[in-house]
Image 1: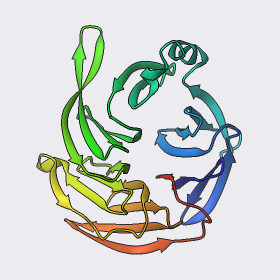
Image 2: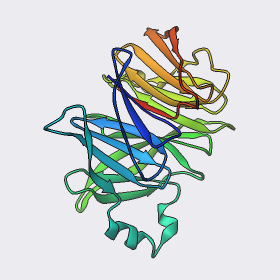
Image 3: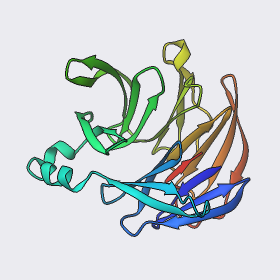
Image 4: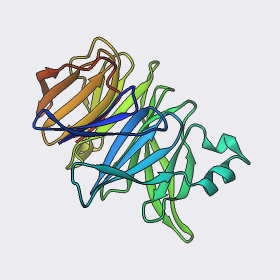
Length: 247
């Protein structure tokens, strides 16, 4: 199942390459989507994250279950608004509390992904860098510290994705190129699959398949065999740039 966001406020759910259902947010264009268990988290242009759950009575309907940050967090940040720029944040899902805000980059943070079980977080920014952060247990909780800068380039990093086994990290850029690193080989650079004509705006990895959404309004489906990536198909039909997707 594939979940897509667009320049509108709509979130569409596709199953077996056919539209299954959809739902709409009335508060901000959809910029990113994350699926975690039975919940869908959507990031919006207004700077907020909405939490959605499937209706128990009607599995084809999604209902909003919460919003991040909560009103009290917004009021707190208004005292020191700069703390909400160029950062990535750690949230506790149970009560949607912000546990940590990390000053990460010199420009907007465009993508954040984590490696399950290895306490590693990767951030990509408009400053052209990909950074690796490690979570450390401290007396008052956990803290993320910078481990290394994986990539530094002139063009913006626009998307990141990790495959389900946590073995490959993909990075899309505004120049249309996709870099990837093999995490099991000490973050060794694996190569650069054939680029798109326009900016890569979103990425998703599922098994040996990689999906890349582009400013050219299409989604390319890649198959990975070792370090070789082959484009299997190009999904068309949208009338605007593909800004986010999740599987």
